Length: 138
Image (cartoon, rainbow, N blue to C red; front, side):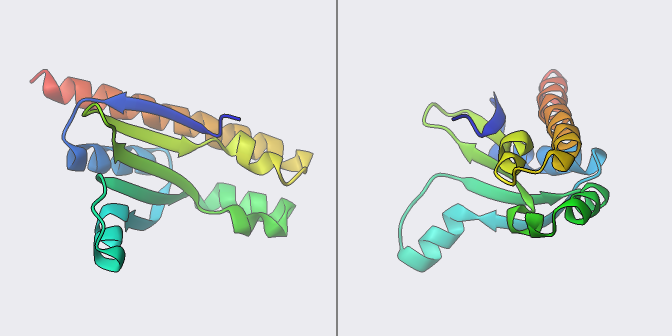
């Protein structure tokens, strides 16, 4: 089962993270948490790992609407967007597919919210690619 929507780019990792955060903001999402998995695994386990960040994204209006329909929805929030280095040197930006995520709630009232979040995440991914491609052409 595919549970993310994603794109890859050939840019500096930190630049991709910042561009992703900006694109999320443009679509009405705040980043509630930013987990540096590489640093955490090094600190807690002494293990090396690729650059990998988990961004906990939330659109307050859509979250409020969803919570009003399904109070347990909070267990699935915030929606995670990950940015990580691939084995071939690309940087992957991947967002949870909210249509898959809320499908487990089995509440049709959430479908329109999931569709809206999905569409916004698709625009975020497209914006990241467009922004990074235009900045690399300069």
